[in-house]
Length: 251
Ligand code: GLN
Image 1: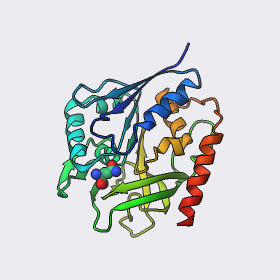
Image 2: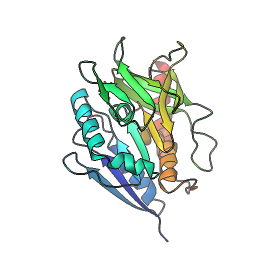
Image 3: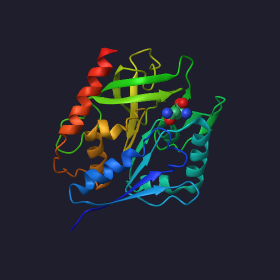
Image 4: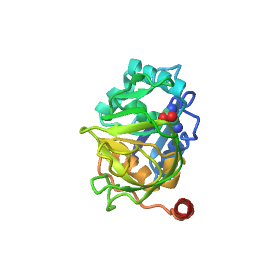
């Protein structure tokens, strides 16, 4: 029997500023290359959100981010799908709105979806803009058949700083860049967070083009757990990673 997968890009009309819609295309391609029957749906904010196995929520500006959060809370489908085991990749504005609260343009707290136990406030320092390199933590999830995720590469552009609560785990430790920002203990910054089948990250790129192992982690989750996916020829992706990582290291 052919495996089936419904991949939903959430509100590209509101959260489409940073090219994160590419994550949906990458997931659909990596599934199709393995003979998985994947459908990619661009779910506009003026319609009810469809049920899916894997949701991608991208970055966006402050105003559209607030509208997206309000729509998603009122719609209810995303929370219900996650409760049923759907996987989510949430990037930057998307990451912030899957959390408990995030700031609007004036810094006032707006309710998020509460799918990740993270809280974002406006940073006091400069806006975080530039390349990020982050080392996955030993506790971070692994794609089936691999020992951990490789070093993460992407770029960030955000004002918010995010605290990870006890109900979620940070995804990685920042080697270069800002990520979530300094921890409350003044320790090295972490990047992103995850719990269950939900991953949030500040990394654009799109992140899955630069980190195909993260794409395979999400595909495995969406296919129902520890599905070992057939390896692909990732030489082009590896060349891109090497080029981006060496540039970040030179700054
Ligand atoms: N508006 C949010 C911030 O500045 C998210 C920005 C983004 O998605 N790149 O923190």
